[in-house]
Amino acid sequence: MPRNSSADILQGTLDLLVLKTLALRPMHGWGIAQRIQELSRNALDVGQGSVYPALLRLEDRGLISSEWGVTENNRRARYYSLTPLGREQLEVEVAGWRSYARAVELILRTT
Image (cartoon, rainbow, N blue to C red; front, side, top):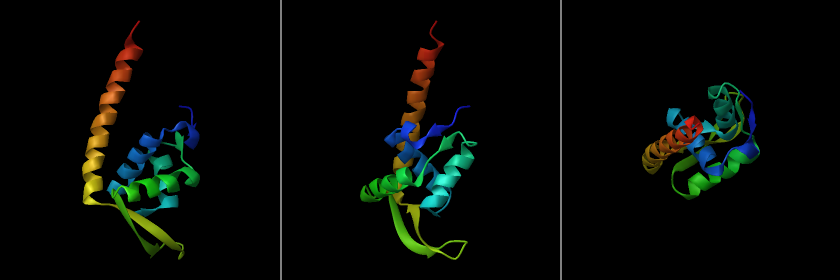
């Protein structure tokens, strides 16, 4: 499977991936990027230059919140977590993505 750079990932898709990653547990930005790469089996390489604007967008929309904490390497970092509104929006986004993927698959199956 070819690796996609962050430039290849649509903004809405990146927001969905960040929300889904944060549904697992609160994380800092670098950890989110690493987790997306890990969960995609290295197919998606999302740089911090894409993750941080997504985090700001999601926080501005009230879908995530943040607070300062200390990383496992004893460094100060901002940790992000889903808000209740973020959990609701995640469900909506997942349903929309699955519907979109089914529609694309129908087109791809056309001979």
